[in-house]
Image 1 (cartoon, one colour):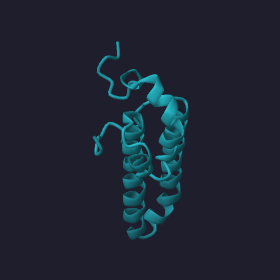
Image 2 (cartoon, rainbow, N blue to C red; image 1 turned 180 degrees about the vertical axis):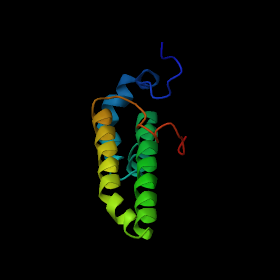
Image 3 (spheres, helix red, strand yellow; image 1 turned 120 degrees about the horizontal axis):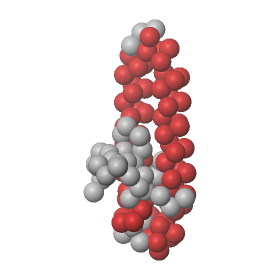
Image 4 (tube, rainbow, N blue to C red; image 1 turned 90 degrees about the horizontal axis):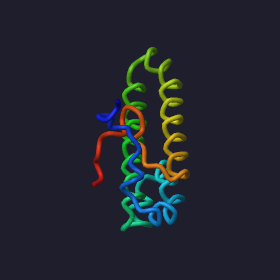
Length: 114
């Protein structure tokens, strides 16, 4: 039984009305993480995806910055790392569009925006 898994779907904590009203804004959070904070301030569903988008931004920006500094090996790893970040972003967008509030793998369990 998988009761302790933090990556379990959390859609039950959001109202169906909130999810339906803010799906598009939540999906855009993976491209512009602060957009839901401005456009849907009262939506906990949009805020969840804004947090996931912020985590993805920090991972992508920080990882690419560090890998750029590392000569040769870092430059070889950057394309694979960038592909990984893109895949996480697509997963997040699909979750948002489908009305799911699932944590992104590896980074999603952290909460910066509450």
